[in-house]
Image: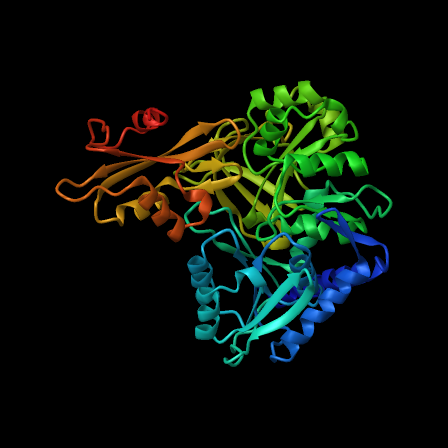
Length: 499
């Protein structure tokens, strides 16, 4: 990074943090966040932020030291994240949807100066990991509202100064989720990409916030104060609560993904309950033509699909309502055009050279706020003469489980670690709600007791995030193989559901 770019990044970081702090203060005694159908004012959120900061300051955690947050979509965690970002503190996300042992491993890997977690997450393994690392432990609770130090700091500050920003979690395509650094200066692009370029509109309906904070879902949270809008926070997505929020507040748009569309259809939500929705931006996975047609015909709500990734700090291509009016019929399978400040190209997998217009290859993108480098994805795509991007599938065989990516080989390696497993094959099988789910077939070694399905699932659960756990595991004497002795994926997938 050149001196000038460092200065630009520092200036952008300071400006974003300053704006966020001011906009949080602007709420005052007005409603800011609704959680579990109770509104919390801006003053209450700021008070919670002010309660967290002294716990860090008293432990001599400087502004440049990394803080780990065990993220949950709850009010105290929202306050902790907003407060740290507003003060330009570097944050590393730790997934709460994993075992206590996995959380402990993450803490030891990240080696933060402080760990902020809900009181339910301060288990023996997490406490022990913080003690080994020397991190100060800060416990959060909402009922009653409380911030308390559960462990003192026993380690001096690291000599390396952190760059302000978020180390957010990917969906785990190549195994356990990676942490991708997103500088604060890039977050305005991220928020803009998730809000369709909207400007401040405090009198508009609230933002619906339900993506997990540990991933790019943090930008749903940031969109509220960025636009000066109220927020309805769901700890986890549910059709009932999502529809309640849409009906109650006459919400005009809300981000979705294929699984959410399937869940709404399966719940047979009345069309009139969603009448306020003008359009639904979506992403986190491919939208099948059949699902699009069924949903749009049932509800009359245009689906404006986008494409992005954690590494790009949000979307790189998207539809706008205006583009949809002009091209929606003729470009239906596209994920739209590149966003402002983004360039895309499609390259040959072998040579890396750009392919002809309309030809397929691997998609690459360059996002100005993240730097000058092109980043290659594992997605096969094409770009037409009008600049519209179409994604044709993945080039790495990953399973997309409701927006969470799973690389089969990662799960297979865990299964192979069991002494009774000779070989294993993991494939994606169709699921009416999630799109795809992992299924495994295991070749058992002769002469040793066969493992149980429960035992193998628990092994995966302890090693990887929970969405990697196969929905079923079949024990076989021999995997079906082709002439090259490779497992036949279609034959393994056909085993699913046989009982």
